[in-house]
Image (cartoon, rainbow, N blue to C red):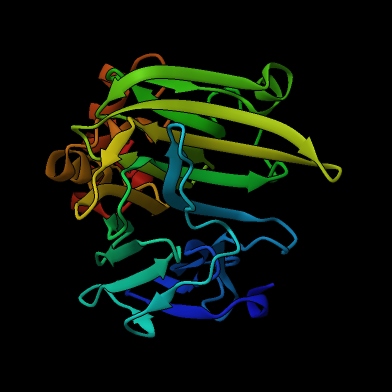
Length: 302
């Protein structure tokens, strides 16, 4: 599946993988510091996999055409051009694609030394007509992963809307089909596993509509969490930009707190299931970490 599209490498201290130039998707990520077994030579944990693989799982960003005049926007089969060959933590990449009708789309992708991508989608209108566009971001997963099925642990679609978390089990979304939140700001949506999280967040100041979705296609379950920004009119000669974030990695609580503080992404720490007594369990977690640092053993810390 990886060989079906031209790709740009991802190489950071914590992440390996590639970006597909077909669709401009982030669909190939492994966790460099985590392995399938305790043997450090065992395969790295696979987080994202491309369409066409055994278990597709990826993040995607872009624009939806709105209004009476539907302009041509880049789709999943559009092949982008890039200004480099490898994404590094100190070396962003910029992709570009032209619709042949006067609109040029760009996508600047940056990544830090941990697990946070910053994606800035831009479009320049060099045509003689105005264009209506709305930005979106999504996380898509095909079929349920192997679950721990612990009643104290949430695995599946998750998001924060209006400062409060919303969790939905895979089987609940199977029957419901869709759950939406309208006109929310500062939140995020994604899919969480026991240890790992894939979540997309719009600019914290932007107002968006968010959804959890499920559908059956080709005898497979398709799960998606997404957001859609408010429409904007791009006048001739004007430019438009929208910034989004993607977290793809391990759920380190201090790291999630730091991202919330630094980037303004509300309550990213709620990706970790602290339970009903969050106000007690999270402080106790920090205390246990501190005591472990003193005595070097979690049994003694407890």
